[in-house]
Image (cartoon, rainbow, N blue to C red; front, side):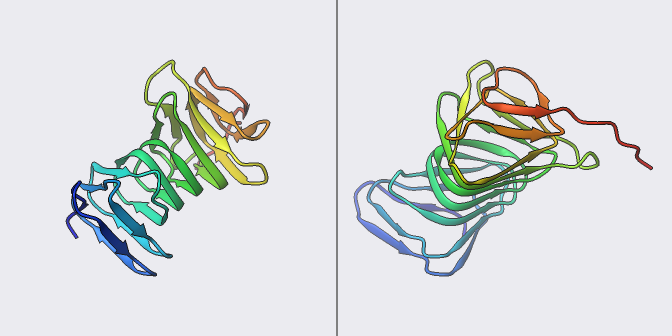
Length: 193
C-alpha cells in the first residue's frame, strides 16, 4: 500500500485481524471518524521519512518502522520497533524496541508510557544509541510501569525524565545532562581486535 488516510466526513472501519500490512508511502494519517480494529496485526512501514499520525482512541498491535520516521500525535500499540532512528510524540506502548547506533528523539514536555519492556541496547562495536528530547534543555518524560523489563545499554542520554518507577539503570552509557531518575554506569574500556 502507498498510504492510509481518512477524510473528516465519512465514518470508516478498518479491521486488520492477524494480517501483515506493508506501507511504502509517506504517511498514515487518521481522523477521529476512523475506527480501527488492529487485532494482532503487524503494520510495517518501509519508506524513509515516514510520518505517522495516531489518534488517542486507536490501539495498534505491532508497528515496525524500517526507516527513520516520525510518530506524531498519540500512538498506542502493543509493540513499536524502530530500526533506523526517529522521533516520537506521546502515547503508550507495551514494548519499545530501538536499534543500535541510531538517534531517538521524544517530543519535549510530553509523556511516552512504556508498560512492559524497553530495549535500547547497543554494543561497543555497533555504536551508541542516542536518546534525547526534540528540544534541547526541555525534558521529555518516559513513564515506565513498575515490574517491567527496561534494558538500556550503550546509550548517550540527554533531557530525559523517568517516572513510574524509582529509577532506571543505563549500563555503559553517558549522561549528557538534564536527566532525572536515570542511574548511569559509565562504560569500561574494551580491548578490540
